[in-house]
Length: 464
Image (cartoon, rainbow, N blue to C red; front, side):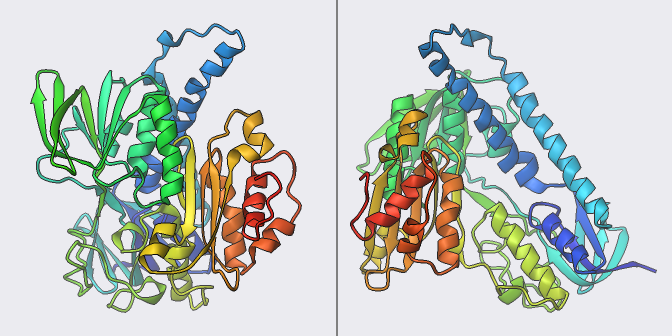
């Protein structure tokens, strides 16, 4: 007789394990099936190890400030293998924490490859059979590989491959200036690698606000990162120990640059193959994403899908929230929202300067013919930014002209990924800019820039 649970969750990433804990809190019996390690890509080969590398890069980069204070620093003793080991140590700590979290909530953890045999039945490694009332699929995504730019993880790297490096190359070309590309450009440049960052669109981080991105570009150039925007790679050619990258800009001008390694980060693709989804009747779109409705239900009752395998924003915090929504619905516990609203999801990019935002961008407003009221306050007007040597940045608010409703907010600068949440809370709570500005902000803090941007909507910033 097959084991039976209220819910079987396929995948133990930030969507799957959060859903498992929440389901257990609601009194459901839960099994999580994971082929690899708990924590998924985010914890093992994404968010967490990359942020540790960024932290270590910030420390190494800040050595110049020590030199300015008269301290002699020998940077030649850098051992990148030890940097890498520190990042893996963090991963091991947190994967152990996730495993302990699941155990504490009496979640049954099953190691193996899951497949949906039919509605209400899942197999593990084609042998073990588990019956259930509901199935939640949270298998995530993998690096996108396109013809001509295939990964060998030696000279042509994916985001997984670059996180596994134990030695630094002298030079690297990064193809794709989205969040992953910009974060690794910052890390590698900080450790002394010659970095060229190539982006087919007009500016780095093309999904973010253009004024905020201009600040990132200015800082990257100052740091020595070579930017090639409006340029696409047409061919990779291995020549001896180097890779030659053939490029063409929008005007059709072609040239070739050479580097020891190439990092290809064109995007990610959903892991939905060989899971039995289509055989169970679940609808996938032409790109392989699962189509979902309210509460992240698929077209088959009792089968839910969350995270990167759906068309919602491919972010760990989105997967976690969707997992909560799905299992609360399964348990008959009405969730606060039926589905994640993309406009209320914060983006967070961790290069230096950091960039974060949510809601409407100014270019989107222009494309849609919308009228907005804008306020921009530069970091340099907040004394704390100058005091800590981080004056590059801005806070930008976009509001509805008549009502003052906050339509979007974008911050670039030191600690932007932390500062954005004050404005996001204001949006969630239906507060207006005057509510933000009327609150006393401690001095000196970077959050004063948020207050000043809110004042600016009505034309009354003090330090702007």
